[in-house]
Image (cartoon, rainbow, N blue to C red; front, top):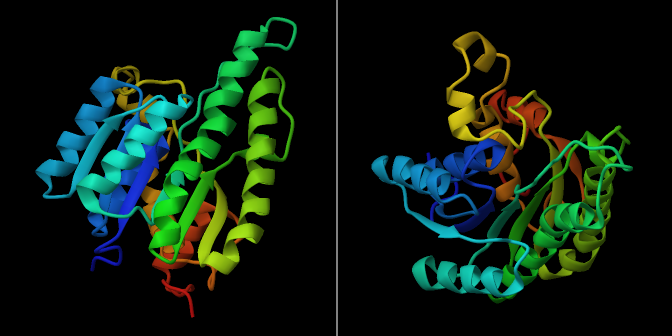
Length: 255
């Protein structure tokens, strides 16, 4: 089954971790996927792996904090596959440091990637969704979006902001038939800052402590099938959502 056949998706943070898991799930579900990341080696590896499976993918190295780069990515996506109607903002950075240790530059960079980056990418692809008469946006949040954590002042501020952005945007875009939802991982996945090479260098027992992000893929595919007439303005534990989908407890598309 390919429930996303004919759809075009942009997934940020697609080189590693949860973003790569989402990109994999979407591609296997039939979507043409634009993989967005800033790390060349991981992005190239993700694209090559999916292309070898026969999936339609386009890797576009993009600093999502750079408005011009984001606009170029959105144009490249449309030129390659047509109008983007699916977006997952999964890219994030997290540097653990106390507020006293942090600099204004640290603060700006964290907000630029984790909050402004999601704003910029959404802004860039929204005209394509409007032209296509609908779409689905999924923003990846965290427990840090509703709860404070030590050494994560900037990260918490960014994720709290992403939550507010998502709920407000869901209200604005429902009439344009575009769904906007939030997810938290809901399972222990490898740390955001850990590269694939660093993860692969760990012992099998250590790697086994973290859940493979592909396990949450069914949850993202479910949300990708929503629009403004379906599920929107909601927050999900995406690991639990995926389990519900696999158990057949949820419709796979809006009623």
